Image (cartoon, rainbow, N blue to C red):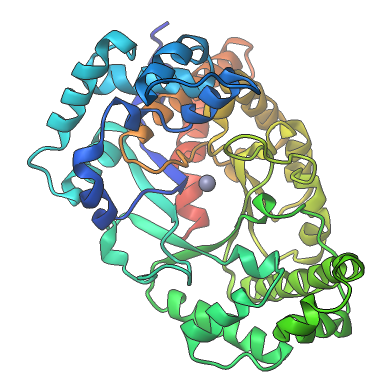
Length: 429
Ligand SMILES: [Zn+2]
C-alpha cells in the first residue's frame, strides 16, 4: 500500500523520547570494532532466548549468530535489524552477507567525525529531530557534564537510580564526592541531591528526571514517615551497624528500612519536579535483556504517585508493555500522565499497533508520545524508526479506512504524536 498518508508518516520527523547513545569519545574509541554485530541492538537478547536454558558452546560469536539468527529474524528485535540493514546498505541481514555488511558499515563511518556520524544516521537517515538522551547526566560518570560529547539537538535526563534502591552507603558517598557537601543527616542528603540537580540544570541541557528503578526493585512506592527514613539513613551511614550482628535477622529488617529511605528520597525528587516543573521519565513494563523480573514493573503501581503529584508531568515509558491497555486507561484518567511508546515497536510491533489504535480511541492525541529508539549506537535508530513509522502509518490508515479520522485529521495526529507533542512537553520551539 502506498497511500498519501503513509508517505506523510514515512517522511515525518521524529522526536526520540529516549536513547542511550554512546558519547563521541566512546564512539571514537570503538570505531574500528564495529562489525555486522553492531547492527544487532536488542536482538542480542533474543539470541539468548533462542539458545534456551542449556545453550550450546560455539567456537566463536559468529558461529553462534549463524546458528541462532534464523530463529530470531522474525521477531520485532530481529526485523528491526533487517529493516535497518536494508535501508542503510541495501543488503539483507543474513550470514552470507556479514562480511559485506561490516564493510559497508565501516565505509559509512570512514572519513566522518563522530558528530558527522551522528548527523548522518540520526538526523539524515532516521530523520530524528530531537533526542532525549539517557546516560550522560549521572553523577557516577567520569565526565557527567560534558554536553559537547553529543550533537546540539540532544537533551539529557538526570538519573540516580541507586539512591532510590538503596542498600548501602555508596550512593551517599557518591553524592558527597560530586557536590562536596558532607551527607551528615537525612536533611543534608536532600540538600546534596538538590545541589547535584542544580549543577545539571545549570547546563541548560537537562530536560527531565529519569527513573529506571524497575531494573533494581518493584515500582510500589510507599510514603514513609520521616523517622523511618531517618532510622535507615543512620544505619546505612554506619555500615558496620547496618551489616553487623546477626546478618540473617538483620536482612529482613534492613530491607524494609532501606526501602523507607529509598522511597523517602524518591518523594523528594518528585517535590523538586513539582517545584520547577521538571518532567519525570519513568521506565515501566518489560525489562531489557533476559531473566529480568517483570513482577513489579506495571505502570499501575505508580498510581499513588500520579495521584499525589498532580502538577508533575510523567512521561511513562515503553507503553508499560505488556500492560499497554492498562496504561491507556491510566493516561485517560490522569491529566499528568503521558503514555510513551519508546522501544515498544521493537519489543512487539503488532501489539504496539493495537496499543496505539486503542490509545487513540481513549486518550486525547496531544498526550501520546509515539517514539524513542532506546539504543546505544546511532545506526540502530534507523531500523527502529522505520519499524515505528510503518506501524504508525498502518494504525492511522486503519482509522481512516474505518471512517473515524479524515485524512487531514490522521496527518494532524501523526505530526503530534511523532514530533510536536514531544517538542511541547520538553519546551523546545
Ligand atoms: Zn532505556
